[in-house]
Image 1: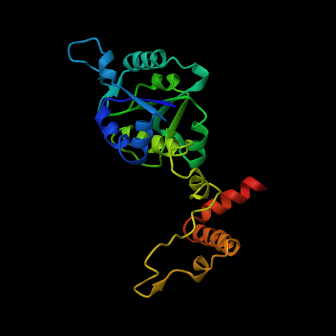
Image 2 (image 1 turned 90 degrees about the horizontal axis):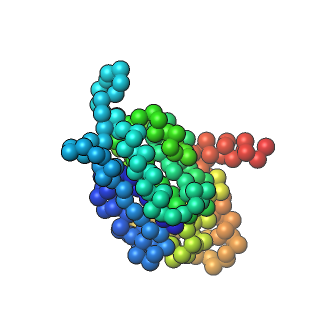
Image 3 (image 1 turned 180 degrees about the vertical axis):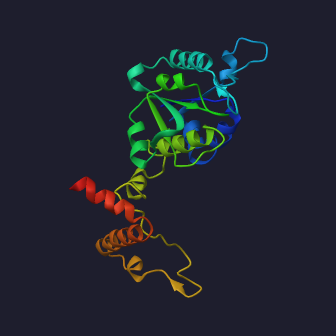
Length: 234
């Protein structure tokens, strides 16, 4: 998979993606990440990429003509069919990113993330994207952190990225539940002992315990997930 990040701050994204599991995936060639700086497509001496909003207001808005050029260059350079490419604008107005969103994005060969900044982007930029995605009901400085979050969630689902691919199938949100509790050594810590069932060697009972615990944890911490699961099965 090729992932292209259109950002004014490529180092901000690169510093995170080139570490840990995602960094190893890049090193193995499972995924390639390119960084496109809109300033490279500005034609004035100051490399201007933003301007004051029409009608007045606080802050600066990223220009549509500059981002359009950056995207056109990105698509052309990739040489990947447009129907196998998905352009995402990170934006608070977009649909909320979910685990299911991450899985659906693994179907593409090329993902392009447009990272807004300052007061946002010219409204006409939205027509250049296939989808607008938000990571939650809050506002951050720019789209770089949301892009990194989504890239991480997508890449770790790709075959061969994790040592054990099956690990992703039992995680939180995969089946509508939060993940069951996990334990490791020591066997007992400050009076709290690892549940006996996990020491039994009976895999059927362990699986039953884990399903039961996943349901209880979800009921306690995120009952909305159970309600949503019931609605989708009715």
